[in-house]
Image (cartoon, rainbow, N blue to C red; front, side):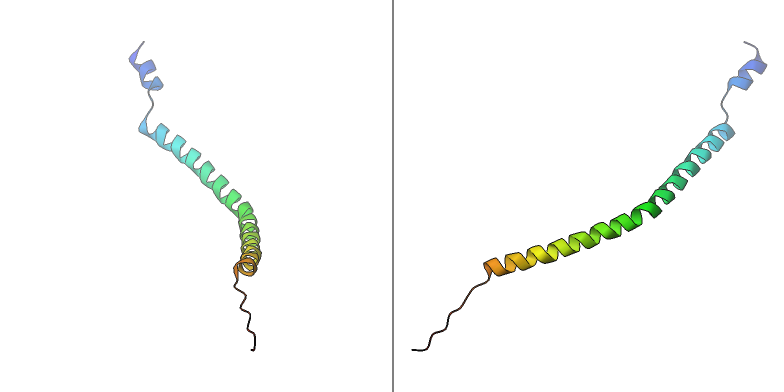
Length: 73
């Protein structure tokens, strides 16, 4: 293999840098796009969990509350 052919086959720092920047740019773009789509889903799930906790708390409160009976003698 000649020196010219060996020089063409070598991977330079610029090659690695440009490839890495393009891959990272694509990943960041996909992350921001999916974050925008997931935000309403996360808000809806949080609201459902809040309502569920409220109703479960009411139910537990009524089953565990003490009943005090006062009688006049």
